[in-house]
Image (tube, rainbow, N blue to C red; front, side):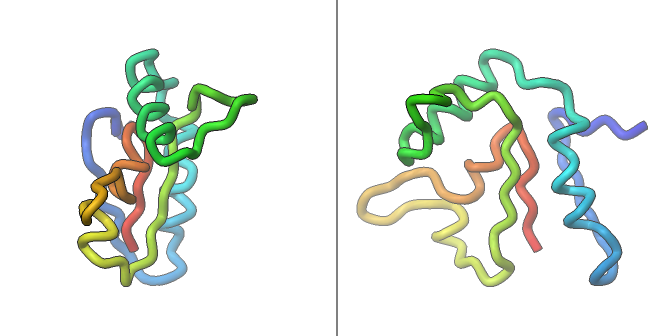
Length: 98
């Protein structure tokens, strides 16, 4: 059994071998988020305006798969009005970089 909570996981394989499919399913096999994790993820989504009135708290682990041509600035964040970027969207979930 592979324990992934608090660790990194690198999936390597040829195209079509199921890396992204497995990564998309990782949030479903990870344990439920703690209250503190939910609050941190919700804060990130709230800053970016991605929360809604009917779902004010994010309870599911996020999954993000940015395009392989993403620039470092787009991935990490920054600019004149700094805000969280792609790497923070996957906090406590499964960010996948192809």
